[in-house]
Length: 64
Image 1 (cartoon, rainbow, N blue to C red):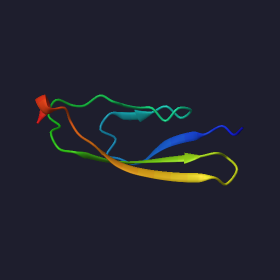
Image 2 (spheres, rainbow, N blue to C red):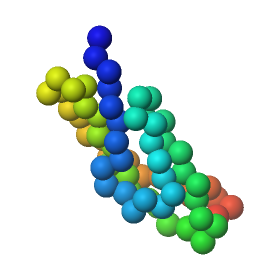
Image 3 (cartoon, rainbow, N blue to C red):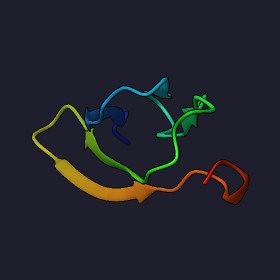
């Protein structure tokens, strides 16, 4: 079994962070942020296995 390492690859770093071992993304959204945020997450198993996933995080409706 390989240990997976997750990283935020392309983000504006709007107080977003990722837990390297689990891939869980945390986001402390600024109250002024109202637009969708593009994120790219990479995962690497340390044995040449890699994957990328891109998605959009939306602010909650109260912020828009």
